[in-house]
Length: 270
Ligand code: HEC
Ligand code: HEC
Ligand code: HEC
Ligand code: HEC
Ligand code: HEC
Ligand code: HEC
Ligand code: HEC
Ligand code: HEC
Image (cartoon, rainbow, N blue to C red; front, side):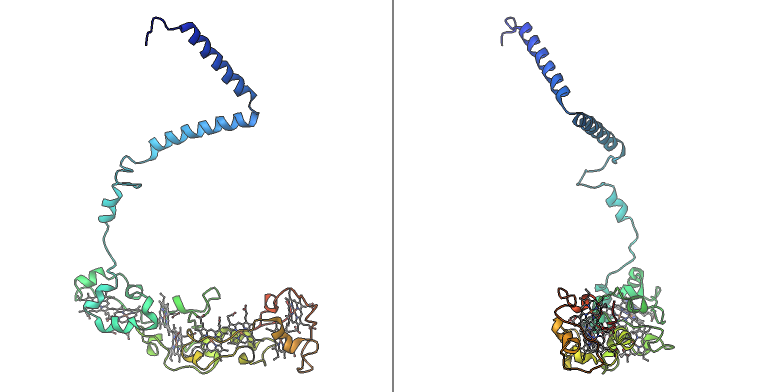
């Protein structure tokens, strides 16, 4: 490029013009946009500043983390051994537990961290939770636990004896198959026994195959599905006992299923 013939004046003029244009553009912006722009610029600078100040020097060396964290984690003592290694010396127990209800509960949940024990089993022995206090951590009745999770009320479930006198902790199936619905659905049975439905048997509303008591999770009973089911006793022209309170199915909150308002095991008017 030939610098001598360059028209500096022309360029200067153009520059001034564009600065002026920018200024008037800025002025033409609405107030709130101006304020926002200032805030955004301040934030960007603050971010750059804080990053430089607070992010550790070795951040990002290998990836999106602090490189020296790896050494810190490696230097931590290992306490848990995992359940695979127990097989080497306790194969009988591992095998038994594998096909039991406790197959999903790891050995060290009950026996505590076992790394040292696996290295020198004769010097470091583990403790076993033999008292009644332990198992209820998972099995005490709590309304928020999922339906079907085996729960007991420990104050009334065979009190005075340790759980392990009747349940092998490595294969805890109950000693006998219970006959009554209340054996496994104790809370529902208790609730119903205080309700107006006390004399309506469970199987009047649930068709329960015999196998449900043997393989309760594989074979499920039925549950009522329609308003008409309840209407069979409570409908105005239902063919049922005279004492049963009646409602007009077509009128009584007709857009909802009954148990959106009446808990069937305690149906007293809400
Ligand atoms: C290298 C072999 C070995 C490995 C691996 C091993 N154990 Fe042991 N364990 C033993 C021996 C031997 C004993 C008996 C020592 C004693 O009576 O104190 C024992 C005893 C126990 C006891 C009995 C405590 C009591 O109160 O009677 C428990 C519980 C136990 N081990 C759990 C485990 C768990 C859980 C694992 C896996 C994380 C495991 N062991 C891995 C060898 C091993
Ligand atoms: C639900 C809790 C629980 C789990 C899970 C559990 N145990 Fe136990 N374990 C116990 C209890 C309680 C005892 C004491 C039993 C007794 O004294 O009759 C025990 C006893 C033992 C014993 C010593 C007595 C015996 O029966 O030989 C060994 C060894 C043992 N457990 C190993 C294991 C291993 C290995 C695993 C994993 C495969 C495991 N346990 C999983 C609760 C548990
Ligand atoms: C970490 C939680 C946990 C602990 C602690 C625990 N369990 Fe369990 N238990 C479970 C799970 C999970 C199941 C399987 C539930 C399922 O199959 O839906 C189960 C199942 C059972 C069952 C089977 C009930 C049935 O459906 O027939 C019994 C009995 C039982 N446990 C007793 C015990 C005893 C006794 C102890 C104490 C030695 C114990 N549990 C400690 C989690 C635990
Ligand atoms: C005297 C023997 C005995 C003792 C002690 C005992 N149980 Fe049971 N357990 C049974 C029998 C029998 C059943 C099955 C019938 C029933 O539910 O009553 C059962 C059932 C269970 C169930 C299954 C409930 C369900 O809804 O499927 C769990 C969980 C349970 N027991 C845990 C425990 C715990 C935890 C302890 C200690 C706090 C304990 N048991 C103490 C005999 C016993
Ligand atoms: C041996 C224990 C046991 C006995 C006895 C038992 N149940 Fe159950 N029942 C269960 C378990 C466990 C579940 C949870 C299944 C699941 O959610 O996976 C269940 C679930 C149910 C459900 C819910 C089904 C669903 O689709 O949600 C109904 C209804 C029911 N049982 C009714 C009954 C009735 C009625 C009886 C008596 C005739 C009875 N059960 C006896 C253990 C038992
Ligand atoms: C008047 C009819 C009726 C009677 C009697 C009855 N149930 Fe139910 N039950 C229902 C209805 C309806 C549902 C479904 C509720 C839902 O879907 O929200 C249900 C749901 C259940 C469930 C699923 C879990 C839950 O709480 O929603 C179980 C388990 C159950 N019933 C067991 C029993 C047992 C055990 C008895 C006897 C002690 C019994 N029922 C008596 C109507 C009844
Ligand atoms: C086998 C007949 C029968 C069936 C089916 C039945 N009920 Fe009932 N219901 C009764 C009886 C009997 C009473 C108690 C009457 C009394 O108080 O003497 C009752 C009481 C009631 C009450 C209490 C009314 C009041 O006075 O507060 C309500 C609400 C109720 N049932 C709702 C339902 C719902 C919802 C269903 C369907 C899940 C249902 N019922 C299924 C027989 C039945
Ligand atoms: C939107 C909530 C709701 C729904 C859905 C509902 N109910 Fe009710 N039910 C109530 C209320 C509130 C009362 C008490 C006031 C009244 O009588 O309206 C009641 C009262 C009752 C009574 C007592 C009547 C009396 O004379 O004592 C019965 C029986 C009854 N309902 C049965 C049913 C049946 C069966 C269904 C399903 C077909 C059902 N309800 C659906 C809210 C509801």
